[in-house]
Image 1 (cartoon, helix red, strand yellow):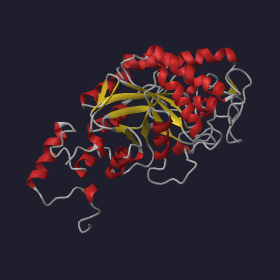
Image 2 (image 1 turned 90 degrees about the vertical axis):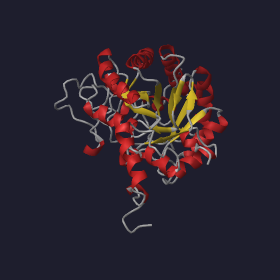
Image 3 (image 1 turned 30 degrees about the vertical axis):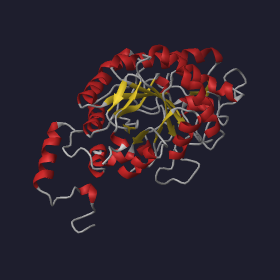
Image 4 (image 1 turned 60 degrees about the horizontal axis):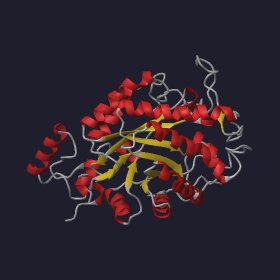
Length: 385
């Protein structure tokens, strides 16, 4: 039997992933004043121990006012490096590659956590309320009930761009090997890209190329500080259903590739409100066509994400040449051992070598000695087919 593509190693620049399974960045809202906690160590560690090739930690904010809510991870100060480094070392110890996403919420900042309703926060109990300012490309809000952000002044923009570069420097010092720039889901970079949110009349607004300028300059600045040996990803909302779509995404990817971007992380939505909803029906693999389009038309590696749930589904996406990497998020919350489970279902790694010995020894022993036992992820119950 040929090795499934899902479990073929892949090299990007000087970094090799043992398989094509990527843990997509997922907000945890569990930091304390920006600092990583034991939750982050546990959360990232369980995915590394579950066999993923690349673990990308959540959108980590490049400046204080970029925090979406209380509990956001921060990387706007060198003081955050040790806590992040602790997570990096644990991920690497378990034979996975550590990655991090850098982000800035822009006008979607200063909100309650999603499970608290996601509404705008009140100043009560927040000691740096005035510093936690809502800024954006333009003074436009969405939906209309949200507070109106302040448009960044032209002279402020280079300072914000430099903060992305300094965040990349800190990510390197913490030991991360992959960096993902968050330019999607209605956050600050996306707020510059989309005509829905960007109504500027200077060189950062108006024409399509002008609206791309902020993203391009962030990439250029990040690459100044991020080593040439390490991969750089950028997450797009390839279709935001608000004026930014696949054609624009392809055009931007073509500009970013020669500037040092290796992979486009293909998502959608997020501009007209908090939920990330594609312009199409939300079902299995609903965003895969975006990864396929970017890979084909921009001639750049792409990462597919969005309701990729089953091992054979992920393998088919790769076999059909629709993406180079498979990212999972909520399915890994459901089953952090998804990569190990997928390997068993695709008929590889019978000795469970993708997970630490403390797991592998006992699982292999059970598989060899008790042939009648079927793992719980393979069936619904004792009498289920």
